Image (cartoon, rainbow, N blue to C red):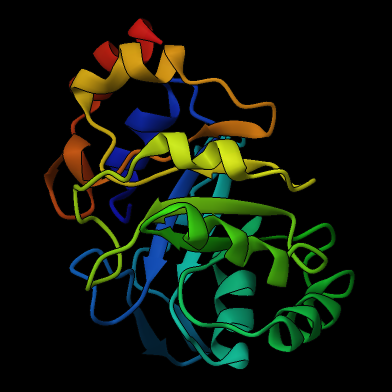
Length: 215
């Protein structure tokens, strides 16, 4: 998300996290502009507005981004969570955490997206379990983010890791009953994206509201 008013409206629904995508190839990309003071967010109100609620946490989504660029956005956008959606290696993740926490953003969380195609895909989490705080299990597709496609959730029966996870990938307004029925001890929530948008980066607030009341 990147529109301050849209974020404010969605936050009133009681969501726990709001995501901002920092990837130039995405139509949802949150850009930055130069100023006399350096590089700042192009929609400063998105973060700096005193009316911005503190009831949700800000998640920054990155795809194979340079560590320094991630750090810059953590500071400027006051991110609470870094979600890595590319082919990042554990060494980079450990170095990123040690650079940011505690000096720049104490308690920063790092999530790793795992692209799921079949049961074998789930096992990829083992490579990252000792360096991230949570996983995002998403549908494997040719492009990153907002595909609108789902994977077979039953393959997550094979996830026996210690870290919690978000269920992601093509969840839509008609999936409330399936989500209620889906049980896993490590599932901490769901990720809602393209199927709740009026356009890339803009959530349909009324549709979200109706969906959340059904969960």
